[in-house]
Length: 237
Image (cartoon, rainbow, N blue to C red; front, side):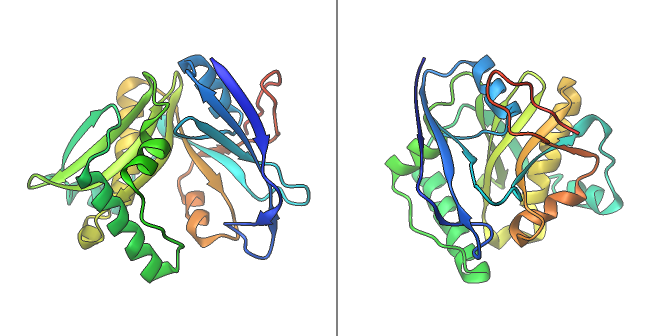
């Protein structure tokens, strides 16, 4: 296993545009499942062979959140979402990249650009591979969702010893009536319950960022209370 550590310079924050952000990175070749777990438990987020976490001097609003899957209670609305996806087929496998993946990814982000003014640059096959396929080891998976043999969503996850790290999900906006983003999270919760895993590591909760504040409704959950190094125990509460 080979690791290169580096930090960015201060830049405009992607979540709170009025603030400045600085990111810390690790580029790790050949990461082991145990090391991937340790990093995830301490607030690092994996994209390909790169792990990142904020290292901002005057802000601590990016809070790592993990959902308690074993104690999650599905609401009536949640159950309706599950019911309307009874004909949605699901497959889980190691991550790949195809033209179908890439077209769906770019379609999703083009829609978000139009609806929410997200910045979007079309990904190449190589860039997608570097972000979502590389570094998956034995733990990285993609969960594919199909409606009548049409790929409608891709959910990228890491399977951990104690749960699931939710990396990224994208879906076909013409199937918004199926609430595929929420449905993919519910499937992660059901998978945790079936495998007796407790936590969904769902990334950052940022109260003042609409794109991330929604995570507060997935109770019960815990937040990472400290900024632990690898030789420091993480404190979740």
